[in-house]
Image 1 (spheres, rainbow over the protein chains, first blue to last red):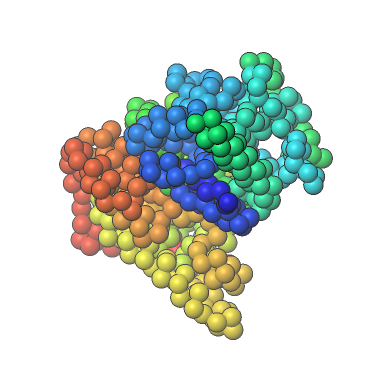
Image 2: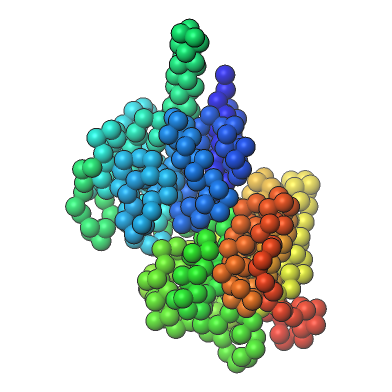
Length: 208
Length: 314
């Protein structure tokens, strides 16, 4: 079955993610309501302003439902602002928004817009050479817990891509380039989650 | 958790581990920040306190200004780039991107804004133009620019000069949305006409638009501008903001509309929500409750020619 991937559409570059997913034949839709959140098999939290997205999730009462779905195993990929939302520790924020990943994320870690940059990055598990990565007022992952797999690191040791179970965080914006490989990785994570759920359902059915 | 690095952010850019070179101030990076602002509200702020209120309400960026456009109108005189200290204080106070305005054609104001490190420069008709013939050549700057337009030709001229983001002008400081609507309709009308124009007629169309053939061809192919386009100039209520979004804006600038309203915090937060759910009348009704009176405003139709800011720069 084709997984339905939602892109959180509170604010930010949600259209670009949807275009990237469509380009690889995946059904993708904007998520603004509880019903839309319930009906997706995986969710992308796009780049944008993390404070704005967090405010809007609270205002529209989606923060708790999203936190619950993540606890139940919903695959989520956060890019840039999305990675900030997923982190358990965000210096400067008393209450990290979702607190789902065992990582510390520093906001605006490279400076202001003048310091935004792009370059080629090797990502573990991504075949076919380096990815072109665009960093815009980007955060950096400056600490990772034991269950977190580091996928890409800068020369100074700061992590810019990592995975913890079905959760994926990137400090950069794969939606701004035509390279589909990270979107394909996320689709694989979503397919695995669906298969696992189906297997658990079958096992539960067999014992009943 | 284990700390992955002790290097301070100020240590500079990392070297690439993929063998490529680190590139800053590229077109992708300049236009990319505007892509991250989409679906958001950029609010004019004149003090640190305003900036904090705007950020708290969910603004995706703030425009640091000495006076909101309504007060610029009232004050008269020459409107220039804001004081450097004011902009710097606002940059210190918030984590969202900070924009600031330079006068049309005043490339030295723009150089100063780049030197203090603002995230975006608005080459704005709200300030008194410094050059009545030419806009700033925006390509050499590392900081991206947003510029105003009233129609497709004006938008494409600004993009050719290096603008990485466009906003339709509207009529700033009036609280009257009619000009914002006119300019947004003119822009999309121009784009739709190009989509119906056959290839052999594109050179003539480019000439009529006063725009480069390459950009005209790109717009025809994309069916939209090649950069993000916000709406500005006259948005005063959540309904106005949603109207501009339904007419095809990627986001909205709100100037006087927030801090000239009865209850700025509530108005700001309501407009932010309205932009997210711009197609949902139930949400729009809900956010329109309990926000007090919008700015009083002034009919744009009644403005004498010399007070029409949108006519500055072409």
